[in-house]
Length: 335
Image (tube, rainbow, N blue to C red):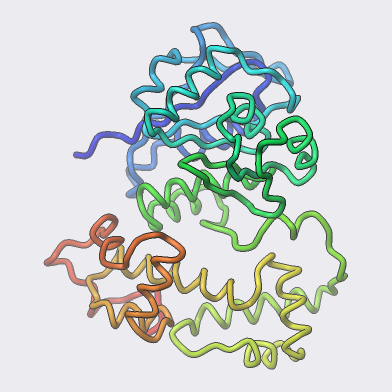
C-alpha cells in the first residue's frame, strides 16, 4: 500500500476559518472506502498552543513547524485581516520549504503571507479580486494576475477568493492523484470537479441574462457533453441556442468565464483523463471518444495544458490492470 500523501496546514492567529474548513474537507476526510487516496493532514504551528480564529473558533495544532520538512504539500489559509503579519518562524519555515522544493499553495488572502516571506517577489500570483490592488500596493514586486481562479509559478500556487480555494485544492488532488480521485472528492462535497474560466465572471456582469438565456446555454452545454466525440463548432452550438455565433460567444463567456472553444477543450481533456484512468482503450480510440480526432492532437493538448503526455498520464493514474480491460464494457464517454 502506498504511504499516505502528507499535507500540512500552516496555522497562526488570524487565519480564516472558511479556508481551514476547505482544506480539512478536501484533505482531512477519509474517503478511501470510495476509492479516494489516503491523505495525512496535519495542522502545523509554531508550538502546540491553540490558534484563535474569528467567531470564537480555535484550531488545535498537532505538529510543529518542523513537520513541514516531511510534507508533500504545504497549504496556507487566507487571513481575516489581509495585512496580518505572520510570525517570523512561519515565514522562515515557508522559505526553507520552498528552497527544499516543496509545493506551496495559498488560498485567497494567503497570498499575502507568501508575499511577506518574499516568495512571490518576481513571480505571478492571484488573490481575491477585491484584494488585487491591496496586494499590488503592499507587495509591488509581485506580478498580480487579475483574472485567474488559481495560478502556479515556481511550484507556488495561489488562488482567488473563497470558493476558488476549493478549485485549487481539487486541482492539486487531480495533479497528484488523477482526475478520478478529484472527482470522487468533489462528488462527496457536492461541487464541480473543476470550473472553467476566470474570476472575471464574478466581478461584473455587463450583459444581463434572462432565465431563458441561462437555460438555453445550459442545454447547449449538456448537449455538447453528450456529443464530445463529434465535431462541435461554435456556429453549430450557436445555432442550437438560436443565437448568432458572436452573440452566443459573448453570452457563453459571460456565464462561464471561458470562450466556447476553451470550454470544449477543457471538457475534452477531462473526458480523455477519465478514459485513460478507467480503461485500457488504445490511444487513437481515447482521442476519438474524447473528441480530439487524432492521437497527435490529443497529445499536443495534453502537453500544452497538463505538461505531460496521454501515455505518461495513464501510467501515473490508471486504475485498470492489464487484465481488467474496460474496452468492451460500459463507458461514460459516448462511443
